Image 1 (spheres, one colour):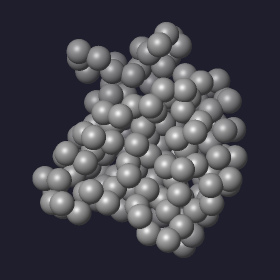
Image 2 (spheres, rainbow, N blue to C red; image 1 turned 45 degrees about the vertical axis):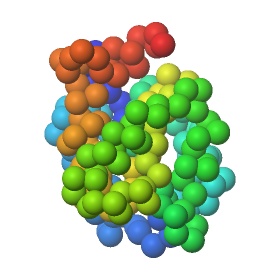
Image 3 (cartoon, one colour; image 1 turned 90 degrees about the horizontal axis):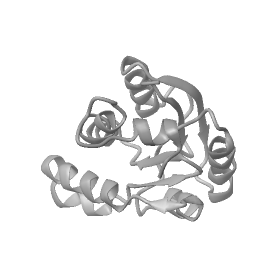
Image 4 (spheres, rainbow, N blue to C red; image 1 turned 180 degrees about the vertical axis):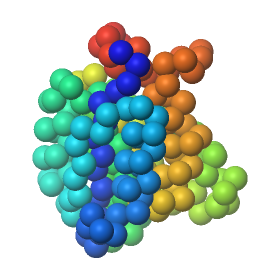
Length: 166
């Protein structure tokens, strides 16, 4: 199976489905890449609400990837990393490092305020992105899209996630 079942979570105290441009962008890219968007939700920036939704998706054997947008900064209630990281079986340090590297080309040193991160939980890849549409475009086009493409070499997540072999 080449396509992956993906769930999309927006973490925001202010966005709804009418104003979630980053979520809309990612949903469109997921389907254009021939993946299946299995679930999409918006929750307020609350550690336990984030974990509740994420835990449900991690436990769902059909969902292979979760993309979270929002709550990765340093402001006020930003708490996505604190909510998500304890759920990881394996941390993917290279995702955050690479995101900040490619983001630096676009926004300079402001990228140090991004706490983008990734990891695996119960054979589910999880990518936590900033809430800006620009950051979502950067992460999707320069990192995630390739990693969710079976033909991308030398390695990608498709075979790993569809077979459950780590």
